[in-house]
Amino acid sequence: MTIVSSGRRILALWFPRLPTDRLQRKTQAASPDPPPLVIAAKIGNARRISALDRKASRLGLRLHMPLADARAMLPALHVANADEAADRHLLESLADWCLHYTPLVALDPPHGLLLDITGAAHLFGGEKALLDRSRNSLCRQGLAVQGAIAGSAMAAHALARYRNSVVVPPGEDAKAVAMLPVEALALDPATTHAFRHAGLKTIGQAAIRKRSELTARFGAQMVFALDHALGQVNKPISPRIALSDYMAERIFAEPLVAEDAILETLRGLAASLATLLAERGEGARQLEATFFRADGKVRRIAITTAGPTRDPAIIARLFREKLAALADPLDPGFGFDLIRLAADRAERCETETAGFETRTNEEKEIAFLVDRLAARFGAQCILVFRPNDTHIPEAASVALPAQAAEPSKLLWKSIRGREDAPRRPLRMFAKPEPIEVPATEVPEGPPKRFRWRRVVHEMAFAEGPERIAMEWWRHQTPQPTRDYFRLEDVNGRRFWVYREGLYIYETGRPRWFLQGLFA
Image 1 (tube, rainbow, N blue to C red):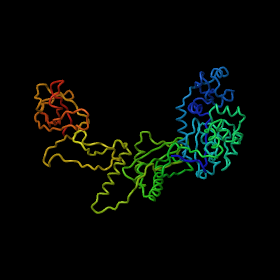
Image 2 (tube, rainbow, N blue to C red):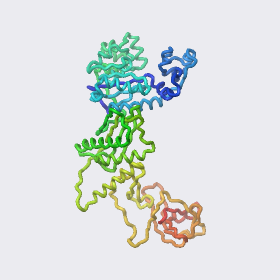
Image 3 (cartoon, helix red, strand yellow):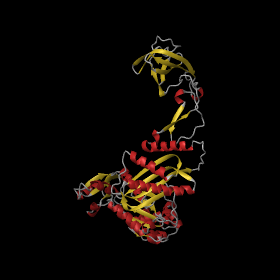
């Protein structure tokens, strides 16, 4: 989903010490006064400092300094290897937490975030209050953070790094960024060096030059970045998570801890969603509840339904089942200060009129039972059998997730009469298992004994054969036919075995397989 920044308000957050903050948040409790910390990475042919904490910066270390020089200056320096994957994971978790303020959050790699706060700032007391609140909350989580609000993503990006905590009035992006250095445009080092070599040290100095001159010397991409920072062109931002069509949330002045209160909140949010869904004649098939903890942790829990629904009682019951079955229980910690419920998937929900002899209520009860079981055990564990258009026994039916299975156009075919014995076993193996038949057996007839799973079975009765030919049009090479027999051993066990072809040239005798077991 793409949002154009024209006429919008963008909040940029920058974490200048994200790699070191990530490590120090884990060790702060164990060591209240840790040594200076730097992150080392191989840059060029030498190991250099790619990030450093506040203490190392105060002691004179700087970015891209050779690690050997840094160790010479500070022998007690603590050095950790760069881990871009871990830094990315932390940035994504911070993006999830920022959904607290707006559902439109985009990553601004390597250490930044962009939030589209259009129409959301008044919920937090205005743009300045929202900026201060988000920065203070992140600081309490042990993160160094800078932020700014502007009308374009590039302007907010630049201001967050060079004019911390500024809120630019609408339409004044060009004035706000004019005095910023050209490095704020996040161009490649060669282009930035060329700017300074040409005497263009600030964005304002570059802005007054002709665009044709800048394009000829620095390229169209640089001109676009400049105009974007000035608010003269639009550039779309891509939120990390697509915005749901239906969403309801509740903010709490005091963090919520009690489980009953959490479930009641979900019920109230489901009622709000039901109103929105009813206006468009739709029902939810997939819902996701997001729980924002006061300490910055975010937890998502989703449920699915077999059919579109907007009944708050049903939705609340399904979430109750889901919460009760979680292997990792929902931990409120110090409490949830926001709970959001979204319908990620909605479908047309027709109002049904039930007659006196219909089975509508029965079908609804079955669907509700399937949804409850799926919420407790997982949708992949609740299956339904559907007939398959084939006469191959092991492929005659297919097991599908009950919630996603559509009604089949095929009907189950009866292959026996009312008084006949079962012609198919109750337990059918997914893959036929080979059995050992003595070489002295007559190849054309049923076996009198066979070995299966190291046990020899002596036969008392046999019935067959029933010949089933393979589907030649589905295979490039011809498949041998199968002759099926229903067998019963001296202990009363009943088996369904088949002979694969009459003769196998490699062994001089047919191969036998056990397909299933009768009750």
